[in-house]
Length: 291
Image (cartoon, rainbow, N blue to C red; front, side, top):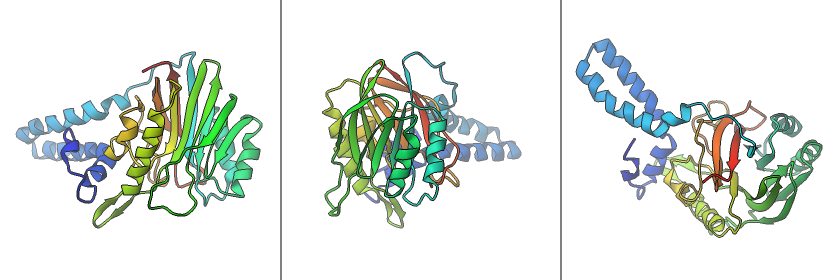
């Protein structure tokens, strides 16, 4: 757990594969602790203290209660709504019902896109869509444009990134919404080269962003421990509290739906109730003006 970066990624992206499920090593330690108790093995119990402390160091903070909301907080929702969602109106109502300031959505396809726009419009009068990603806001938006994060190997039409400026009462924020390419677990390991390339392009776009405060909402197809997302996690803050496993919705194993921030803190992240998607929505509280 502590030296997961030492696992090489050169063959089958095995390092990234391990990091995608790194928190689940904790339950393995718990099982071993139970077995040690049943065997009444003091030596084994002492030996298991090390991985227990390691897990607590890496992930224990996520279990702590978050600080009380502050006056400069933004509440944001991130959701891959699925291009096979049969109830876009119900999904939109559920997301709006959580009362966020911003909603970032992926896999927006016609005719469902029109349903999301119509259903969210009463509470979210400002929105922007580029390709299959979009953002809805209670605050005015300007300068919405596409961000090119398409890997070289993809030759068909493919638009999964946007950037806009959110004019909040506490200052302007550059908001990005992105959907990185999917990864696949195969016999040869983790197929994530396209995702990694796309993450690099998005990381460079955020690095070049002139506004100080940046917010990223997206289905990044990777966890924050995954080194494939290092171009983003090395530049941005991730959630301080909460696991919020978001995929797959039927039995969530990992949080691949992310909220990250620059010059702001993601105080807490959690999941919302299931929608018609194969992902769970995540909702996060962001405090602007924090590093």
